Image (cartoon, rainbow, N blue to C red; front, side, top):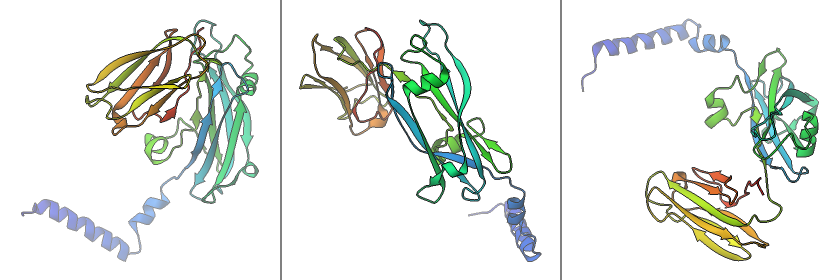
Amino acid sequence: MKINNKILGAILGVSTLLISSCDDGDKVIDTVFDETTRGAILRTIEADGIFDRFDTSTTYGFTFEEQDYEDGDLLEKVDLYISFEDNTEANGDSTVDEILIETFLPADFTDGEFGLPRASYETTLANALSQLGLVEGDFDGGDAIQFRLILTLTDGRTFTNDDSTGTITGSFFNAPYFYAPIIKCIPPAPVAGEYTIEMEDSFGDGWNGASIDVVIDGVETSYTLDSGAAGSQTFTVPEGTAEFTLAFSSGDWDGEITYEIIAPTGELALSDGPTPAVGVQTLNICGG
């Protein structure tokens, strides 16, 4: 194998430079570290719960962990803001801009699994609506209550969702600084009528053992895409039904699967995938 002399010369030149720098006590890596500004993140440990349009006692919450290059010693405070995004046109525009609702100081944090400071927040839908100044008629299913965190360090620097790169907020750290649970309409009783299941498979070979399992008053029926890239099936929930659940069961290639459930009212009651959540799912049906 031949090696380009110019490339080899460049490599040897860089190597000589690095060796020479080390010999002279002027380490390149030290210079890089000295001139690099390091920040901090708020990593999401957990975020769960649900806001139900028909039950304002339902709750949503999240736990976050602060991490900086001094293992939490640079934490000064975390401010929590709430806002409201009105996604339903029928009841007018009730959008609410950000309001500061809580400030977490170092004393409000506890040590997490790795000795880093952690804090949690949880609220009922009723309390969130009160903080936003919203009343019945101002909100509906499909609207979003938004929470945003702003981290302030002891040197005055701040970090929030606008400052984080995709690497931080995505695959490397789950650090969105932002949570926006959608208000759902969870019917207190089964909504009767015909439902449609729209199924897709990105590879085009069916669902490979995955299925939508519907239970109506104790009788279970499973629906799947036997082959191909797309298909639809329907089922009917009779009037007077006492029990109705819908669940997704995993197959061999869930990463290829997406589906939608259309309610008898014509609303999109559920949409999930790729890699849909396994188990019983909550339907969102606001219409009567």
